[in-house]
Image (cartoon, rainbow, N blue to C red; front, side):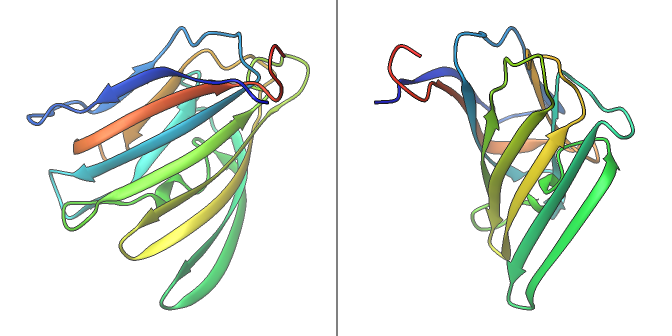
Length: 170
């Protein structure tokens, strides 16, 4: 049986003026990290979300693909040369209705011999997106930054990070 533990929780304040949330000193004692993030924009109609590992915003820092579905159909995009995890721009946080949500898994995040793999799903009231990414680094993930692309803020949101192992005592 896998061992899953919550290792971090952040709640945006109701009078939020945070542009970014940086979670650092992530323990290296788990095999994978699960991220759950939900939020609403508070400063405009929609805000796109961004997640970066170890605060890496370098050009070509990430490679990725995403497929999105909405009432207009399904389409897929694939890119290299990204400065954030691909598919995050699909996590539009709206000021209306339910905002947006994301769930993703960072596989083997403490590994230092190969590039880090990320996969997940996002949704809002208009569409959902599934994404897969490669972080172009073989560094262990020690921090995760959550940011609005246009430096706008979020409200009514939470961030959860869970650490888990494939097998008990692994």
